[in-house]
Image (cartoon, rainbow over all chains, first blue to last red; front, side, top):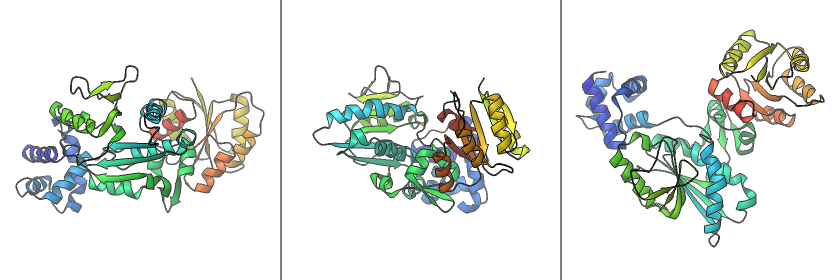
Length: 268
Length: 122
């Protein structure tokens, strides 16, 4: 792959997704795109760069952005954020929304669905506290392919093992040929749609948002714009969960960090 | 150092599992069938057992049942392993007292995750 082709691809991906791909990730661009060339209908990465750059092929640009920004994910990723949801966030919302008896969550950048569905599993198992409550989860992602897969809710044998206990697997999934499919009741509790964090449609208001391991890819002005847009879709006092390497500090005053729990923020 | 008993009739599978487990800090012993496994548990009292399903002499399910019938001071955790991912098998294994279920071929990360889930790895 030539330097010019790489620069074009990086530029197109950044304009579409806001994700600034560092030059030290160049190997990733080649590694992810080269196996896809036959199905993209181009012979080389140079030809691909020409099609999405100079020729402005939007469909191809979308596929390339998908391939370079869709990250693998797992169930109950990192564990701790889900403990915080159960132990800190849900009890707080139950108190504040006692009149409506309704909870609304948003998994921003939900990839192939494991995060919003993990949350659905957590809430479905919380029958003692949530009896008589309605709860809804929205999952959004930039990638149309990821959202389509999330809606399908079918996961390979490999995928269902990543972070999901055997007990939860048999309780919430059914075998579907070689794959496993999340049961209808949980699928129905999660709405999935395409959305770009850089140009969000009107959404919410939500009681809590998970937006994890996305900000790390953005530069500071983009981080600020995304955080402010997320804040505008949260109820006052609503919660934000970020990834371990992410913070709102020094970026926006729209959120206040939780004094004890790292990664947990509250809309100011 | 936590102890793991690796039970599989395939020496290759035992070696693969052992290599992953040793990287995770486990001290491993091996058994090639269910009967050997029951004997090894009596001798070494491992913290966890990685127990294959299809084996000669006494299969994994038979060994699981036998082990759960023994009067332990502190029962070993049992992770059942198989290439088959039937719902019936997973249900049967959990009902018979298995703590987790992992599908072959092994993936280091998933294996670590399952060992964490049963409380033998930090």
